[in-house]
Image (cartoon, rainbow, N blue to C red):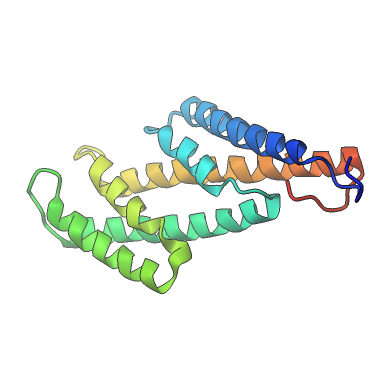
Length: 170
């Protein structure tokens, strides 16, 4: 312990590494176990919301969920309204990204919507449809973000309880 009663800096660093690693691995395992199509998005989402403190992680979770919801709605709307038979659907991508970039320009915390919409549009399969794809990608993101948020909170709580600290930066 340091003179002020705070834990040494290496404990915070080790806790962050453990939280990120654990969140990513658990998100991957859970996404695969429930049969989600692209478990990578659960892993990425777990890492994107992981912050230095549980409070910051919870805040990132809320923004991630809101931005993902916007991206999903935009992708569904654009795919439904813009007919684009070209391979890769470039017209749909342009429209979706323009809409999401406008949202992100107004509210930077929602930038995730700029990649959510293209991911949904680019991973949609004709036999499944855009709504099914959006639900699947949204489920992957929500799973990863939730796993990270819960794990960060549990690790922080455990460290505070074990060390007797009322508030930590981990």
